[in-house]
Picture 1: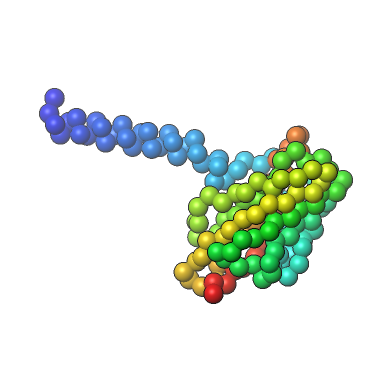
Picture 2: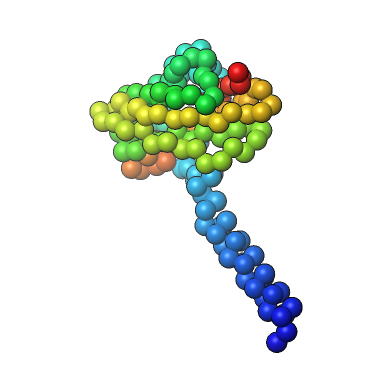
Length: 153
């Protein structure tokens, strides 16, 4: 075998490994949910937002400080009423630009969850974000999306 043939085989093998790794890691970036609620019209920059869950329960979600800044610690709070929730995470994703994996898990009990997060700065000035609250009820994974804008200082 020639060096060129070995190099070509190694390159094809590396591409195949990257393809398999991408396929296996894709659910991390776009979680598979059982139920996805419609985008809430509520603005997290102005107030806590409330959404009705499929089982009739409610979630109230807030991010502080307001307006929501980039590159500063954010306090995330969620209160769930009328539904059992085993696990709660918040997936942050740029609506127009991929900004990497950013999904903090919120800790809590008795329907009250809290945690912290950070948003990276965007060099374009203003960036629109989706904050999708992911609720694991034990029976289904429910996605509750909210949208807000952050202006870089």
